[in-house]
Length: 485
Ligand SMILES: [Zn+2]
Image (cartoon, rainbow, N blue to C red):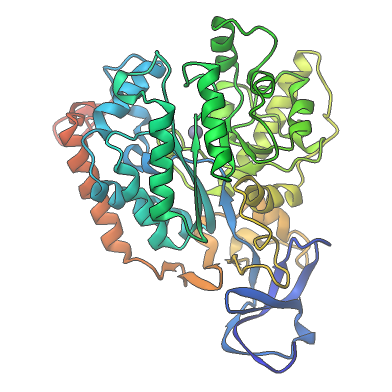
């Protein structure tokens, strides 16, 4: 392309393309027209003109980050780790709490809470997000979530979940046919080029019987959309043993049921039996690492076992109840640390297979972008920064003190993993539309989003009778040994 006018041109940037050849243009340009990348290369060779030219000097341009595992409406209880609770600390108690809170919600309250989470993620450089929505009482709660997602311009892979295990509160339990009807309803309203809606059991143990798992899988297969299921964890293996399955873990169990194939988004991938990584590879499923929860409960995720099998997992932070920050930059660091911890734990168990695999800055950046794209089945038009792909990209300030010294730019990818965070993201573009510019949302008013989320949260928790569980950090009270005046 020569001398024609394109919509956007970013000049003199450090362009990390993650294209097929993994080209990096240390002084590069990228041209965007009608939502797609039309040219990318060495800046000195750029002969294009644009309606809008953006100065990329001192900036890195790279594909948008993907949050590959999340529960978006949990923004309601962000940082709730120190709330008091009268609930039993197990899955029954957790789900009863969800029922008590969310059964008071309206789509409008959900919309206002979710919108804050979406804005938070976008300001941090996220261009695509996963959501497992399992608080469907009433059914219309999820419509508020989807309205906010549609407004945001984010790409989204949203699972309307099905729960039926007898350990769950009655209000949370449904039958498969009703859930499939709901998935159809949501698809008819919300499915578009940016949003894909599917159904999910969350994990194989939150559904009552294997027959139900198969029925749900077949129903989703008939809709011709990918299936979403979390597949791992020692606690789920224990539940399977109690139900009479003793041949292995959740992956083997689901593979034997015939519900795993290349159309499956295999979430929260950790604590597998040694032979299950090979089963995973054979099925062709995608994978996703959620490191912080795994540091807490399972001595780290097994990223190296996936990489050893040429599976590049996506990265997710899970819901804000347990992981208050929405930063995939932090998730990259957690993944790096957690893999070291996991290797040490495996070594103590006498298991050192795949320990030669190192998590380089380059592979962590690929997991945070390309791995997530694959996990969310975003399609062939979304990928690295190369001609004919959709322009889903971010621009990051690399000329601040956190990037120094960089030895003539030699350490930029390393600094992007270990020194960058949400505050460095200056511009976010999704399919050629600028949604964050000069660190501000172009979609929503920042103050309105913050304040309406605060008011909606207070209203909903008050209706649920939850106020007594909030930390007593109010004047005249004490909490954790501090006295509030
Ligand atoms: Zn989760």
